[in-house]
Image 1: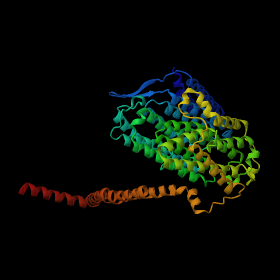
Image 2: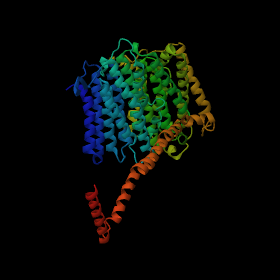
Image 3: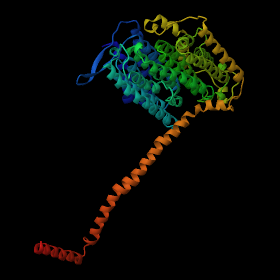
Image 4: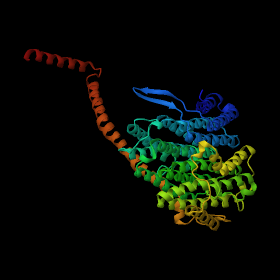
Length: 600
C-alpha cells in the first residue's frame, strides 16, 4: 500500500472506531487512540519529506468520458503542509488529554478531531478540484461539530451554525468557479490545468474560486464566523482556527495559482484578492485592539494574519504567503494553547481584565506566551519577522498603498498583543481566580514548550528540509527601507501599549467613540442582521402572506369551501334521511324523464 494513503486511512479508521465502538463508555481509550493515530500520521509525513514517494490515484466515479479520481499528489507544497497539519494536530491532541480530561463528551470530541484530521489531510493531498471540494465540505462539517461541541450552550450552537452557513455562502461561489475552470482548462486535475495565455472569463473564474478562500480563511465580508467560533474548546481554536482549517483557503489558492501559472492570472482579479486581504488585515487588527476576551483577541489576530497571507497570494507571491502560513501556524497555535492554559488555570475565566500577575504564577505558560507574542509581532530574528518581511517586500515592490497598510497592521499587532501581555500576565491579580492560578499539568505544558521551540526555530528547520525550502525565499537581516519600516512599526506599537496599558487596572480607551467602533467590530454583525431582516425575514413574511391569503385563502381555500358548500347543500337537502324528500326527488326525476322522452 502507498504510504501516503495511510495519511487518509488512519484518521478515518480512528474516527469510525471512536464514534461507533468506543463512545463515551471508553472515553480514555478513545482519547489515546486518536492521539496515537495522529502520532503515526506525523511520522509518515516526516518520512515523506526525504523520500521519493509518488502519489497514487484510483477511479471514484465515471460519467461517459469524464472521470473523477481520488488522487494523492505528493510535491513540495503538500509535503510541507502535511507536516504543519499533523505536527500541530498531534500537539493539540496531547494538550487536549489534559484540557478535556473531565469533559462529559470526551470520546465524541476526540472522534471529531480524528474526522477533522481526515478531512484536512484530504484537502492537502488532493490532486484535483473535485476531491478537494469533497474534503473541503467535510472540513466544514468537522468544524461545525467541534465548534458546537458544547451544544447545550446556545452561544456554542449558534456559533457552529453561523460558521457552517457563512462557509456555505463562500463554497457556492467556489463550486461555480471550479465548473468554470473545468470549462476553461478542460480539466479538474491540478497538473493538467496549465494555461499558456489568459482566456475570456478566467478573471471571473479566479475570483469565484477565491470565494471558497473568503469563507474558509474568513476574509471580508465572510469573516464574521471566526470570532464567534471561539465558543468551541480552546484546543479546537488552536487546531482549526489558527493553523489548519482557516489556512486551507490560502493553501488552496497557492495550489491553484501554481497549477494554472502565474503569468496568465488577470491583473484585475489578482489586485482584487490582494486588496481584500489587505483590508481584512487592517480591519481585524483594529477590532483586536479593543477586545477583552483573550481568545477573541487571538481570533481577530488570526483574521489579520490571514489577510496578510491572502494579500501575498494576490500580489502573485504565494511563496511568501505560504512561508507566513508555515511560521504563523506554530506561534499562533502556541498562543491559542497558551490562552487555553490561562483559561484552565483561571477556572474558565476569559476576560483579561479579571486576570493579572499570571507570569509569576505560570512561568512556563508565561514564557512560551511571550515567545509567541514576539514571533507574532515580528521582533527581529524571530520566525514571524522573516515571514512577514517576505510579504512586506512583495507589497513594497508591487503596491505601495498595500505596503503602508501592512506596516500599519504590524504596528497595531504589536499594540494589541502587548496590551494583552501587560493586562493578563503582569501587574496585580484582578480576580480571585487569577490570584490562585497555578501552572498547568505537564501534559499541557510540554506541547507549549515544543511549540515555543518550533516558533523560534521553524525558519531554520524549514530551510534545511527540501520540501519546505521553497517557502523560504530569504532568511536574514538586511537594513533596507522595508526592514526599517518593520522595526519602526514594532517600536511604535510597543510604545503605545506601554503608554496606555502598562500597570492599568481598567481600559483608559473604553469610552472613546472611535475605540467603541472597534470594540463593536464596525457593527458588521448588526448590518448583517438588518440585511437578513430585509432580504430574508421580509421576503419570508411576504411569501407567507401570499401563501395564506391568496393560495390557501382564495385559490385552494376558496375552491375547497365551494366544494364543501355544494356538498353540504346536497347532503342537507338531498341526503337528509326523510322519505318525503326522497319521494319528491323521485317524482321530479320521473317528470324530467317523461318530458325528455315526449318532447325531445
